Length: 245
Image 1: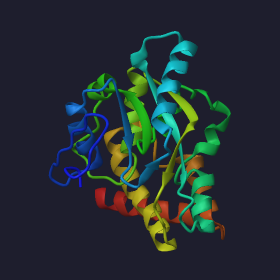
Image 2: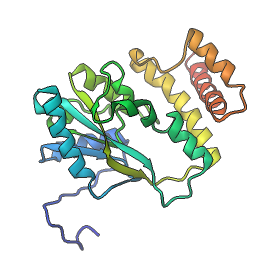
Image 3: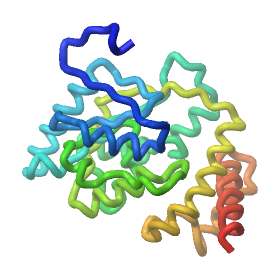
Image 4: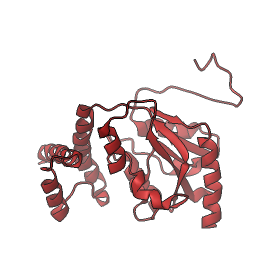
């Protein structure tokens, strides 16, 4: 397909053995020649003006911060692809933050996210930043986890002085249908990987402890989507913790 198409700009493509997302991203940024890199997921469709919106957002972020170009990442907005049959459960995933937590940062639209919490929204399914910063802060390659690798990466970005600017006008669409079983299986996997990632990076505090764990336990008995999610998350965390003891 790539060889049979023509492009109004230079494009390069290459293949590597099947790998974790972080490995693929690291190999790609090593070949990048542009000033800015955008990371998207394989099931993410960009709106026609998404790249332009990212570039303008970088310019605005610099003017607000009055800082060097290299310390800003721009987070775009992702929602479900409207061509899909979006279920009630999928809508809940989006609003609750279990899939994406954009509603939690809506008040920071066209502005920087709070520095102390921005890593939790470093969604690598739709974010752009200078290639130099990504090259200097590469993804972990020695883990094979589902979830959390972008949050860990975001924490290191914060430590490197990179601020995340939220631009909701840069739009993308998530083309992925979740069945009920897949949603709850995903919740369980998040619990399993949370234990592993917290062992590697304790400051992430992914596994609830103390009063927070009690709240998780109590709400896990509720006949709600959040109750089911927390029940499966805790089940996954218990499985992994028992394997480590």
